[in-house]
Length: 101
Image (tube, rainbow, N blue to C red; front, side):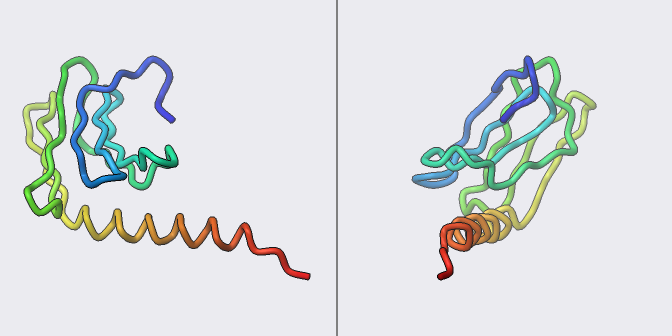
């Protein structure tokens, strides 16, 4: 699931089943804690040495992270992308489990 040797630097709860995981491979992942599936992977900031944790806005529409390059990174429509990926993953599981006679 994560690059070899990479560490989790922070956790942020998105909802009852999804958690936002910051890691020191400069990635932020939204993971379904029930299935273990990665629903969304975000990159752009630099996080290789410090304990940087991405945070969600109160309405979960936006994600904000500091970066080792001295910038702050802001991603919008996070909630919409997670909902889309959740629907795709559910549909994909349904389609792969249908047996045609």
